[in-house]
Each structure stands twice: as C-alpha cells, then as structure tokens.
Length: 209
Length: 140
Image (cartoon, rainbow over all chains, first blue to last red):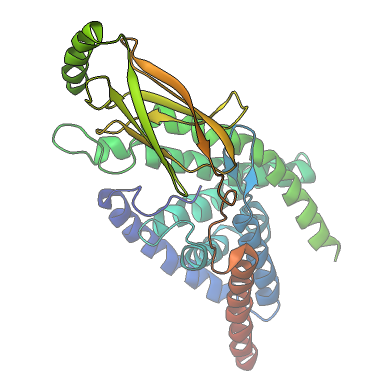
C-alpha cells in the first residue's frame, strides 16, 4: 500500500489533509478519554508490532511485494479511532525513517489504512464473532488488509482523470482503475489470509495472558 | 518518422555497398559502450537491441539504441557477451564483445540498513509511549 510522494495530485491530498485533520482531532479526543496506565503499554507494544510488520516486505510470486500491517489486531483490541491515531504515527515514522510512503500522501495512507482498515475490521469482527470468535478475528485481519488496498487502488486509479495536462497526459500516477484494481487487490486478497491468521494468533495470545 | 528518415537512405546505400552491413565499436571500462553504425556511417538509432551474458539465453538487458546508435551495459562477469541489434526492416547485427568483468553486482550503499531503521523506529515508538506513560501516571 504506502503510496509514495509524487504519485497523488494536490487535488487529492489537500482535501485528504482537511478530512484527516478532523479525524485526527477526534481520534486524539477518543484516546485521551480512554487513556490510563494500563492502556499505554499494550498500545505501545502493538504499535511497535505494527511498525515492524509494515517494515518487513514479503516477496510474492510475480515480482511484487507486500507487507502485513497488524491493523486488524489493533482494531479488534483498541477500536477504530485509537487504531487510526497510532497507525498515523507509524506511517509518519515510516515516511521519516524509511522513506516508505511520504508526507504529502500521509493523510491518504492514514485514512485508507488506519481508518478504512480499522473501521471495516471492527464491523466485520462485530458481525462474524456472533457465529464464531476465531472466524471473526480472521475476518477482521482480512478486511483490514483488503479494504485499505481497495481504497488505495481507487485513489491511484482516479489520478489520471483528476490531474492531467491539456492534451490528456497524466501528471501524476499514470494508470487507470482497470490496471490498479487488479494489480493492488489480487496480492492483498492473498496477503489478507496471512493477516487474518496472524490476527487470530496475536489476539488469542493477548487474551490468554 | 526519425527512424524512417534514417533507415531509408541507409537501406538504399546498403543495397549498393554491402547488404545489411552494420559495424560496431565497443569500449570497455566498468561499462561497455557499443556503437552501431550503418555501412555509410550513419547511426543505428532507436533500434531494438539485446545483450546476453556469456552462455545465457535470457537477455541480460533488452532495450533500444540511443539517438547516436549507442548501447551501454555494465557486465558483471568476464567473458564474451553477446549483443544482438535488429531493426524492423531487417538490418541488424549479432556479435560478441569481450568484457573484463567488473567486480560483480555492486550492492547499493544503504546508510543504516533495515535493521538499523527498525531499531530507530522502535526506539521512537517506545520512547514516545514511555514518556507519555510517565505523564499519565503522575496525573492519576
């Protein structure tokens, strides 16, 4: 996922910054309300886990590479808003330390991965856990991978339509939806399976302790 | 257009001089520069070219010659490197260039490396949450 700087047009990331600013303010308020000395160490450890997972690139057959995110785990344990806040922190850190992602695209990545992924993970978990707890965790991990990928693919795919020169040359990311959707979604549908299993593993482990 | 302009006189000349002649010169350093010219000295511009490692069938590099009919590659082993160049209208060449073989594929210098960066990131995360937890405790 992690769209780099220069792939998205200002017409995309300026409104995204406005949207994300509101969401960040709300997320910080949520975090302050739930904050106590038992929350912080758990949040720190799972944020660190997310950072490590996002930094380790796994090669996939066909020449592409993906990375897990731990967003499903964060969302099930802490809820969508706290997840959004800490994922934003991780993305900022990755942009500054690793050069993965970027500063102009930060709100887009944060909204897609942090908020889109976490909200869909919580909804999926809430629905499926009534049938089976473990299936619910798996669905949370899978959705937390696939939904952000779909959002990112759409944002990338509409760039040629949003920003182009007078004669139709794309100014930023050059490929349309018909290319980005399969190229981004297919690897992430597979990765989601691993992320779902990881979510079961980590959350079950946390609950046993 | 450019290609057609260059290919037409070359094709006419090739018929009178020697058919489909393509001369080449190669200079070796850490990179090999191959220069391709038609028999009359005009450059073999913007045409398809492939470079093969010694004894390999999969191209090491595939692309096109530049405006001056040149092609450059950086060999990572010694031996006879095969160069193929061809245009749509049947001109071309297939020859080998002896390369001294540089010191293998160089690894790009990576300041900290992944582990170092992970350590920095983890330090920042635990540092932020650690300092934060001090303030939370003092409040309650």
